[in-house]
Structure formats: structure tokens, C-alpha cells
Image 1 (cartoon, rainbow, N blue to C red):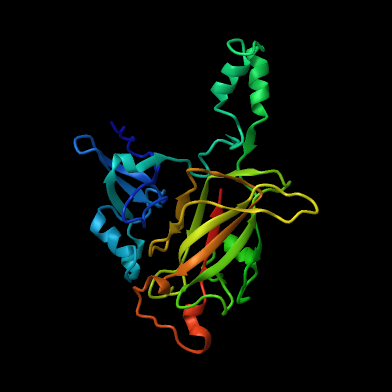
Image 2: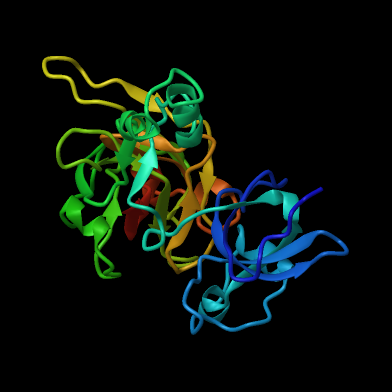
Length: 299
């Protein structure tokens, strides 16, 4: 039987069909024990943000269509089964240390295996051995590269909360709003892996943002080895932005990522979704030949 999260709990949406809301982080607004459903307010974590009372029908419309400025500022609230949420942390709430993905088991399990009830080591020694599998969470992030850039601003601008700056890819790879463009971030100041449990993306809404990233993947490098090329791993999930103007937070779960570098790989813009009035024009596809965003946050 599903356990209902408490009102105010931070959760990620998982396992939904259709998928636009999956991995989005929100706050539980209401629970219904009889129907085992919850209302989740996406992205807005300040009580003064937006207005109360948005319906799920309103949220479905912002997943693809054009909204007015007023609509894009209302909170997105989805009503979903209690089985479709998982507890998560926001950056300010997360513990400083996490258990490495390479650990053979939980901290409690390692103490049991190694301690007085297992191999016979003193429990304090078992706890100390287990601490070698602790990993720090990402806290220092730099944008260090891109597959291409139109060059309007330095790449570091994507880590700033400033709508007058942005990243837009070069006018080459994308076709009709679909392609493969990436931004690369260093998440470790000392080349030691860091736990990355979430990513945020902020975009311009339609009709002002036809090239705003709509779907993206995450690739990551687990370690830095001198004189060896970096090996990039692919996280299994596809993430999808909504047509919203706030920072959209996504949980990186099943599994989380332990990495030194992350690439945010943009695979489709709003044009590629096919629900805008914009059409590719000009040499090479015009506006449909680029993808872009305002801001990225990684934690």
C-alpha cells in the first residue's frame, strides 16, 4: 500500500504517462488518503510565488502550448497517484555527504558486515571504514565548454540569474528544432567525484522562446585520469521542460550521478515539439537550427 507523503514534503514526480512531468521536483500541497492521490506544486518553493488554485488541466496545457505571461507565472499543480512521487532534497536541504554509488551496501549494512555482529571489528572501526565510501555533494560548478555557441555571452552566463544573458547554440547542427547540442560543467574542484542529485533549467516561455530547450539528456564523466581521454556515461532518463518561466528543478534518480563533469545534452527545442506557430526559415533552417536556455543550476 502506498504511503502518503506529508503536506509540504519535497518530492519528485516519477513513472507518469504521458511523461512531461517525470523527474520534476515540487512540494506536496494536498493529500487524499481515500483515493491515494496527492497534489504537487511544481518548482515554486517560496510560499509567496504565484497564485493558489491552478488545476491539473491548466498544467497539461503548459506542457506544450503557448501561454500568456500571466499564465506562465501561475504555479503548476499536478494531481497524481501517491505511488508516483519520491522524496528528494533541494540544494539547501541536502546532507553534505552522500553514500558513493560504488559502496557495497548501506552504511548500516556495512557496519553489520564488518562490526561485532559480522567480521568482528569494533563497531567504531566499522563506521570509520564505511566513511571511505562517503562522497561530497556538488557545490562548486563551472561551465567550461559547449558543442557550439552563437557567442552572444560567455558560457559562464548560464550560471547567473540574469534574463538579459543566455546561451544559444551555433547555427549548424539542429534541424527543425531537433539535434544534439551540449553544455559541459565541471562539478568537482579537485577532480574527485561529487554526487549530483539534481539539475535546474530556466528558459524563456513561448511565444518568446521558440528555441528554448524542451528535452535534454545528461552525460557524465566519473573520473579524471591523466593522459587518458574522458569516458562519458549516459544517464538513462530523458528530461522535459514545461513552458514555464521559473527555474525548473529536476531530480536525478534511479540512479543519482557521481561525477567530475556533467554534460547537459539538448535534443529538442520548443520548435521541435511541433506546437508553435514558428516555422524554420532561411538558410540552414533559421531559428529552428538553434537551441538555447537562460540558466542552469546543478546540485
